[in-house]
Length: 95
Image 1 (cartoon, rainbow, N blue to C red):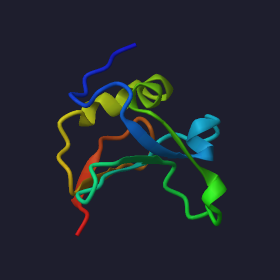
Image 2: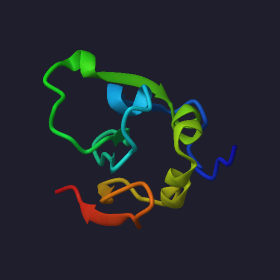
Image 3: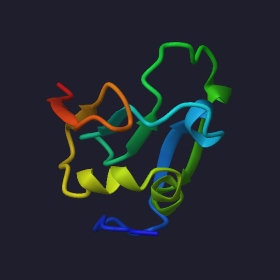
């Protein structure tokens, strides 16, 4: 497994249940400016409950999808999205 992030491997990250259960790929990522938290989500709007999100380590996220290592230098306050797992990440500002 490849791990390129400068953040510690045990950095807490939010993932949706679809990503955690490998039902859908990671298509939406944010690196929050307020607290530096990472979110790795499927990009769908069908997460009505807090129970739909789990906290896992950044290392665990890279084990789910090594392609997120492409964003290892993404600064806080930035997000990225892609159409499918094989597409290029498109960054955007979170403000």
